[in-house]
Amino acid sequence: MADAWSIRRVYLALYNCILCAGWASVLVRALAALNGAGYSAVYDSIELPLQLSQTAAILETMMNAGIVRSPVSATLPQISSRLFVTWGVLWSFPEVTRSHWLVTLLVLSWSVTEVIRYSFFAAKEAFGLTPGFLHWLRYSTFFVLYPTGISGEVGLTMLALSHMKSSKKYSIEMPNAFNFAFSYYYTSLLVLLLYVPGILR
Amino acid sequence: MKVIVVSRSGREIVKGGIELPNEASVDDLKRAISKRVPKYYASRQRLTLPLRTGQSRPTVLEHGKSLKEYFESSDGGEVVFKDLGPQVSYRTLFFFEYLGPLVIYPLFYFFPGIYSLLFSLPARTVTHPVQKYAMWYWTLHYSKRILETFFVHRFSHATSPLGNVYRNCAYYWLFGAFIAYFVNHPLYTPVPDKQMYLGFGIGLVFQAANFVTHIILRGLRPADGKGGYVIPYGFVFNFVTCGNYTTEIYQWLGFNIATQTVAGYSFLFAATFIMTNWALAKHRRLKKLFDGKEGRAKYPRRWVILPPFL
Image 1: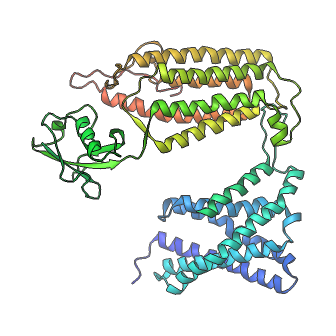
Image 2 (image 1 turned 30 degrees about the vertical axis):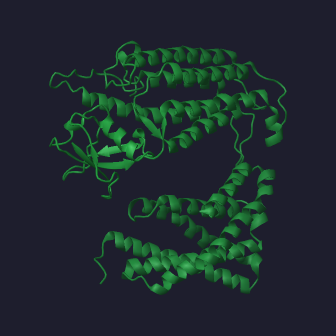
Image 3 (image 1 turned 120 degrees about the vertical axis):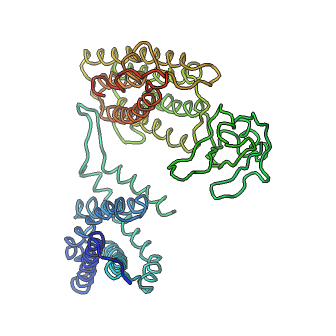
């Protein structure tokens, strides 16, 4: 029923299982924090597994380019926006973002989506099964979790904007010998604008 | 002869095929097709013979050749049709690419209010000489390009897909704005005078040289655009295949030595990368065509684009 085990298949099976576990850990911890101290404690409870799981998705982009036949152009914008929010907003601007309820919205949306997605792929690679239930779950939860996730991403970025402007973090100012300037604030504004065509698609 | 025209999926593009005299050319066929299906004007058509076993790419029916050369029998044959989409002449493409930078750059120079209005920066209090010269230099460069597009360059039959207009214009226009923003910035730091003169001096010398290369390239091609490939000779072409790109790159280097911006240098690198890819392809093509066998000339040993590196 299942075809032969190859290095590729072992790798994919392991990858998907590990990531499923990672995101499940995020989900469980987030729910525990919600139940306990409340929404402001969510970020601290999930920071490490979130960063690990989200950043590991870079491997996924490289896989899409090589091992798995999947359009890089579809996954790249999504992974980029996730990494931008994880590192460029949440990790970089803790004071304004971490204790906000939008973090809960974001983390729950992401983790539920990813647990479903990775278990679907893990089942496929490890057992050769494509359970209809998981398939259905993936496509039906999308309608709720995609908008809530995007709202979380956009909302948190907007929250951090004024702080980006005042702190001038990651920015280069003129005058300087090479006449270059980089504004993290304006770049983030541009990133927010790019969400619009992404949503429309 | 009778020619059947099918799409890649096997559907007949022209029902019942097309009747043509035995001596008909590829262009005659294309004209006949566009008569029957008006929206497929000739430059939009890509005609190939059906793919044979062992071929990775089908044989393309080339402009200027007669159909006899492609069909085994004089009764005709089958050609596969591909719609390349709306096409635009190179002249049109170049004009719009170059118009953007020509118009956009001076805006940043003449309307420094942009900086305070859009970017809440302090107003420009002093305009450095280098900024003025850079604006003239840039204007000269893109005016030259547009004039060459209309009066110097001889374009082959080739056209470019409409999508390239958007892509290429984005490249030129956005980079133009990017560079203009920084060179005309109120907090711009000029380089020492000697460096500025050196930079613009180099730039002007290579702009002139670049113009000469374009004149030489024009001479390689007959006016009706029918010519095939020829080994270029004269001026820098004697030792570098794409001397036109070489002079263009060094010209931008001159501009950057004088203006010194990250934006300008990144444009130089991007342009060099793109031109190097083109140059490698052209060099390879010429070497393959002029292999010295069967009475053909042998392509001489030359640099590809950037002596002494490549």
